[in-house]
Image 1 (cartoon, helix red, strand yellow):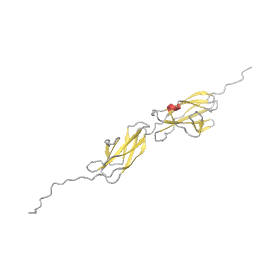
Image 2 (image 1 turned 90 degrees about the horizontal axis):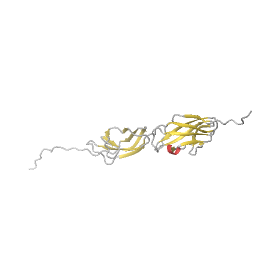
Image 3 (image 1 turned 45 degrees about the horizontal axis):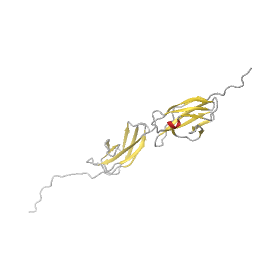
Image 4 (image 1 turned 90 degrees about the vertical axis):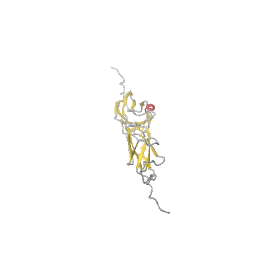
Length: 212
């Protein structure tokens, strides 16, 4: 007879959200990284985490401060947009970065000869792959750097603590005080501040011509 019924109960569903874009990071510390991203358009919130499951948490912000990390260690984060039904939008985007290296401790300086001193780096808890540069001031040197062979030049040379060893720094003057400090570099090439400094005199020239 062509008579319509009432409408059925209704059903509703959100379309998928636009995926997040521009994954990156803003600030790093020795134990934290602030991960960042941008909205790709329309979304309800974002899910993030350390793997593609993005189950660490959700937020309406476009950043995540991750803490409890280790110094100079590479981490990767993942983020994906969610719609109003909390459905994630396809494959997440990701970004990797290193935490900052720890500022080295004061180096240990020991006397060697009238023309050299030994310098031993204090890693201060950094992992073994961390690299360091050794700066020297004193005598005729101002803001110069120890080279891998122990000589002194203008440019910083970076090596691991193991490669530096207890480095004999040569080309020094007798009975002269030299000051050393050290900076570390993380895996992304970001330097720390310089360590506290340590100073030591080279040996004096021995007296000669004893007689009466």
